[in-house]
Length: 286
Image 1 (cartoon, rainbow, N blue to C red):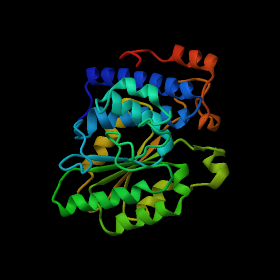
Image 2: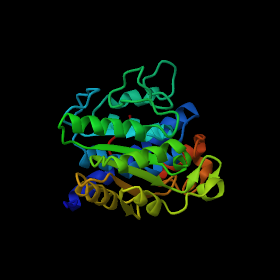
Image 3: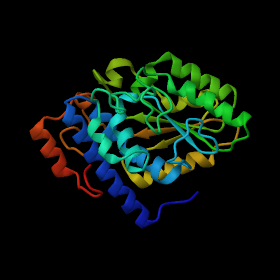
Image 4: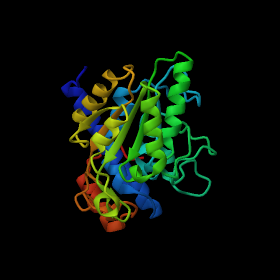
């Protein structure tokens, strides 16, 4: 398994910092959006798009001969849009249009607007893993050796369709698939434990013939990259792979961290300035 060089770590950390600035500025500008989960998943998205995935900025909906990513918990669109823009799919200036009328950057990713990098709409929770399994199966039929990645939230694991998909993928040995679950233990109305306890996800998913690995610090860029590369090394072995990525909602902004209250609330002017004072500008604001 490859590991990150110190210079790579520094570069990825700088990208993470700028993405966090993008997130809070986007949500603040329209007083709408979901900063908490977006901030918590920055390291995952940056690892995937800037280090791990084999993907083309010349976007093609079919994704032939390249890795494909599906976002299931679509409300964290701010981090998805920022990383797509910062990795070259569309100009960063377009982030200014987030959630505005006729924008390609809708509150939840959609396909009608034709935004490069987005292959499915993901507003309703629980659906993208099923799409990911279908796409992974297609790659197998086409003898395309690239991988399918999918991200779900832990609150989303309360959806029945997710478990049907997990059971199917394990049963059918869909071994070119890596599912990551963002385990931040928070959802819109409170903690996952309070709303509907998820129990032992590792044991549950393993029971359905999956390889499961845990990333204890999903807000450490090296830990996340190492975790995904470890997951890659376990593919093509008659089992799908799941990463349980433990993150902190709102990571990087002290007054947002660890609280479900920032699941879907935008910072006001004063809170934005306070947030930006904690996040270094590294690549230039859009």
